[in-house]
Length: 192
Image 1 (cartoon, helix red, strand yellow):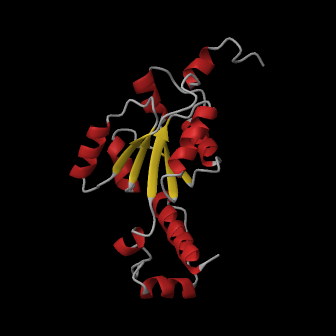
Image 2 (cartoon, helix red, strand yellow; image 1 turned 90 degrees about the horizontal axis):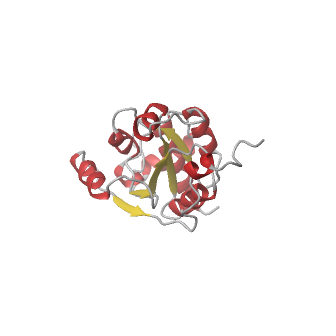
């Protein structure tokens, strides 16, 4: 591993620790190096200089029944940056926006998404405010799936009001007919 790769890995670990709340500790040598180069502050938080060293992508969805379309979407989202944070919709929001409860609980869906190799971390979204997650993650890029109903201009405008400048990328899919809803409605679903 080169020195630059090692530094990026440390910065990535610090970043993920801060947004997930999972503790990460640096050894003294690494901490001194990052402090000396102004990549972290005395409290171990990334400085703006440290944060510039990584490109963070935020993607989201329900992910109730993981299928090839989801995996393709997450792979393409990961290709946009170094860190892919995936926000998983809360059960209450799935019910509110789709009119049905998900088959799998929000915690199980987050665990499943987090197990996909392209995903650096999966977190649960906010129950009331989509932009609170954007504030928490502070992504450089928001990746949207081809069929997600979120309005790019609204996300960009609302993020800007909260002091966050980001790029929005709408990804397409080679599997537009593979959707969780279609799988659930297929008579073969549940045959086992």
